[in-house]
Image (tube, rainbow, N blue to C red; front, side, top):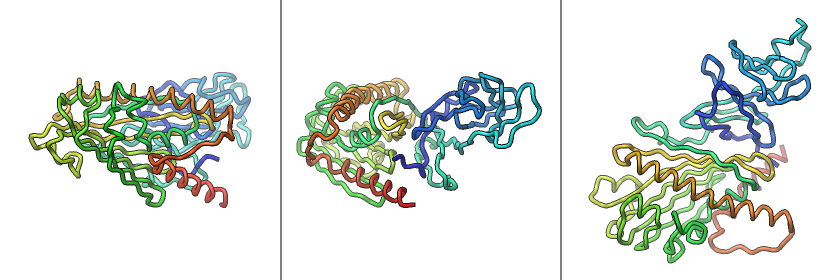
Length: 346
């Protein structure tokens, strides 16, 4: 079961242009395009005539989308408005149009049956800070979205999967961890003191000695995350506000990132990641390095997650155990299960 009554990221804003693009979201085929007037459009990616994907077609000058197969045209509301060789448009000749909202660096789509509430779009205010810049990306993962959610809430894998980037032994040695569930959210806070900096932070921030490190993660069902992470010289306390120490003489490297885990099918997802930065405090080369590191780090996760998915499919009833670092992920799975039961009861 997919949780349909939520906003999902359909694309990076810059991905939507005059060339129609196909996305699978919650098992539904969707075509995205930008009309000549600049409006972003999302339609069911299936011609009502012979079910050829409309994403194979083209955008006309009037903003309609023309099917490649027989030339039927559909307006941004999904209505068929033109059929070559006939003037009569059959009743019901339309495809579903989806609400698509561009906000920050993302385009958000509503696939649910209830009226959408734009106020429920997960906020990421750092995208909208004056003068700030952003780095965003999208990866494809051949695994169930729950595995990705679990991965992002269990930082104990960092030293073992990511020793060349963001992992170090100190991540799991004497980490001070708190986890709590608040409704449909799970909050995970980790504090690590006087540990060796991981390679990415050492190179990007110029750290030579030990550091204090923090990881604050907020999960919002069904698959959205806000991360506040960073390191600071071990001689300085971890700031309660991730930016509070930036004005001091402490060496510090902090970042806010947003992650969107969007189910494509039961065994595949589109994974979106983005972070914002103040160019007065992080130069372009450092921002490029940090983004590439984040991207490459998750590519390491992709290999693990896809192998995990394969094993789970081969032996679906195999026994397994839970360990202490699973607490946040287990909370998230209970949130998802509660929402599925609620949706199934409606």
